Length: 325
Image (cartoon, rainbow, N blue to C red; front, side, top):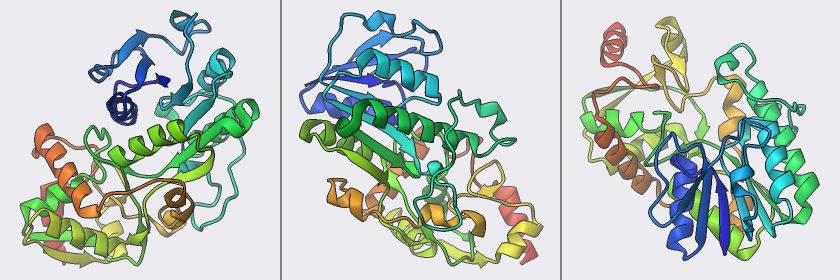
């Protein structure tokens, strides 16, 4: 197959392009080319999707399938569909952020917004990202119909992860000692980027279509952390800290420079408790959590265990918290 990947230079796009090349496909990656190189065996065509004619460098090219992994803009999606909507299969990587009720599990979506997503304003308008994804999904479905494969990805882990969330735990547990963990009764879900990419390529090959949550099975958070500890050979003592104490010490859930990743407030726990069954039935094959933990630790070591992180609890903050207990 001849596959166009809109993106291809970082994380999900790069891993998907590499999987497609490994599968023997002719792979073209369309991106600015500023975030990194495309995988060996793929061809980069430089485009600027912010420009009305930004896809012009692809004029005259034809493809069997398109994988759109990069969009943060309804305009990007619409222009790509206008240019290549005649292909036989279209994958759009969306997000579980499309759901309107993150405190519970249902399929009600946010209202669509046909806008460009400005990451600098996400804290002021936290629903913007999900609403723009909804509008983008709608555009794909309207144009592609039964040729569309939409993947609402959850927390993606693995080599190339730029967000530092899951990787905090293999890193911290690898170091051992007393480790502060949130004392919560919640489920959590991850998907290894390699497994997500393999599923996307498989879907293009098989013609799999429909709308799915791209996420692994839900598991209790504390069980996940114990599995990660065992996988990285840790002798760590998991110290369970009540949510009230975490809040008193200004420790944030999920992400940020002073946070405990994977911990979600009650208002968002439905986001990590969704049913992975439909995706598993459609071919998604998650690897064992222990293997993902080891892969994440290898990535952490390559980046530097002592680097400044985008998510996680700094050592001094954790020591202060444990002392307070």
